[in-house]
Image 1 (cartoon, one colour):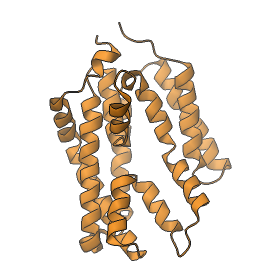
Image 2 (cartoon, helix red, strand yellow):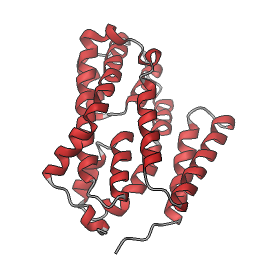
Image 3 (cartoon, rainbow, N blue to C red):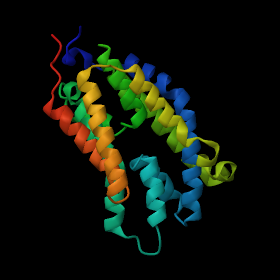
Image 4 (tube, one colour):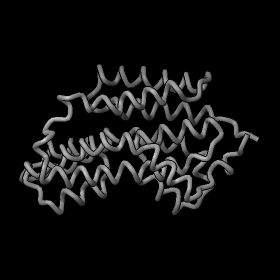
Length: 236
């Protein structure tokens, strides 16, 4: 078995392979980008601001949430809280990737994490747990998803009426089904089971009894805390 340091090697061929692996899913991401471009244009944002938001924020659900709060005066505090709540799962994603990312320079580490999303993170973790070099999936897959998110956003500015509501045709289920397949096909041991159970149960309790979107924060923090306290031993 390879050590974490060996698995953290990043070759150009790995990045290209990761790009191709996430390419099929990226077409569905483009559809969401198209819907966002249309919705943002209808809210009165300029084309430059819309494209810049997608390029720098790169967080579909958060961007849609921001549009719901958009107006003549943008409420910054609610916007920040909502965005943090929706993206709190990245705390767990970052913690789960740390055993491998710690072996590369901070510049590469945070550069790659700028492109981290649910899909390429899930595939990368599956690869790592199989003993493979999976940073290429994280980087290349992220580039594929980002590129098609940008393409979709641009198309939405001009052809957005084609898909005004991606949820009405079930596109919102594509990523969920993909992540479920990754979870079921990934590593299975007591540690992973406990982490998933703690995150799931705490998230559902927060969904029922705490304010909106807080279940994302609670689930991510509780699962991440279990993973941090129950560290996985490095392979020799």
